[in-house]
Length: 458
Image (tube, rainbow, N blue to C red; front, side):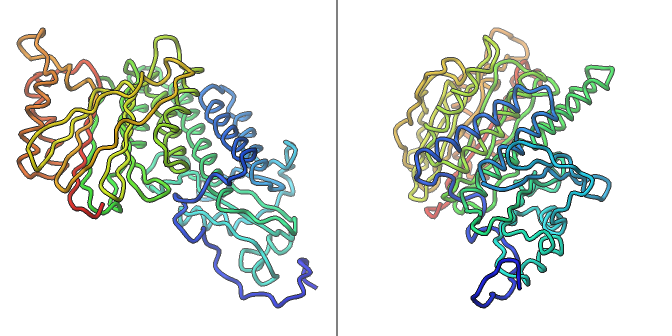
């Protein structure tokens, strides 16, 4: 008799797949306030641990333990892909106990499929046939439920993030992993990837004798975290650019697809430049990606980010942050936490509007509750220009007391917006004008993001 002891006929063995919708849009909150609060607490704790911990092994154990806890699994593994083979880096079981690696068995087939496809697998086993479809180890171990996600949820094969997978399973007959389990599991996997990258950067910086070499490594890693321009958001033409004052930058930008399929645009600037702010930006960027894929409320996201960063950032450090959501009905929801006011060019009138701040910079006061600014309409042809202060504070090549300034930015925005150019071409022209003004000298990081509503279908 099959070990599931099922009386009804077993269904044919399906190919294991992620949930029916895209994994980035899975639901995180269940509606159970106690459970939801615990899930958010686990995610916040993981973010804090990644930022604060100097003990990588303890940190990885912690995140795998939390993965087992929040999914209700019996055991969890962190599997890395090194030299063409799977290597179990962490193996934990329920209750926070380690597992002897000597006779450890798990579904290598599931893990390999996740590594090869850069896509999650979440499946419940109902029959011997389904178990064998997943691999002989699933059958032999009598596993009922298996879930596995890549450490690189972006699916970017060019990313510097360590190839690997986070894996949990259970033999319990009543256990079935849900969409919300997968969503939180993805968030935890993201933070494991960031922890490994931070550790990699730290080790490389220790091994390199010259500071210049470690800064170049930081630049490479940070560049790898910058997004590719999304192509799956209809009706929007998007482009982003940044240039650090030193090798590593305190600036960052991101394009993130929300759980409802909208586009979230983020522009951030951590005070200072160099390797310290660069590490903060990496942590902030990974946290934002996790939050944006779980929540549709920009104000709530920035409020949670602020509570986390305010407790951990050094005195005098803070993050200016502009976050905007482009909705399907042609509106722009935003929070501007101390950022340089973005500009919106209106095609119908040729006028420019400034987006004012809605709260202080992130990390200054832990109890700040952020609110959204007034919702803005974005008609076809309207363009959003978001940028950091490195552009408006650029100094003239022959007159250091003269800044490019708000007026200079408005002038170049008015010129490029009316030219009918693409988002990329407009960005490149803005950068060219600032460089010409400053003679190529830069004292601060510079970031520009341009989003044009190209049709009413966005």
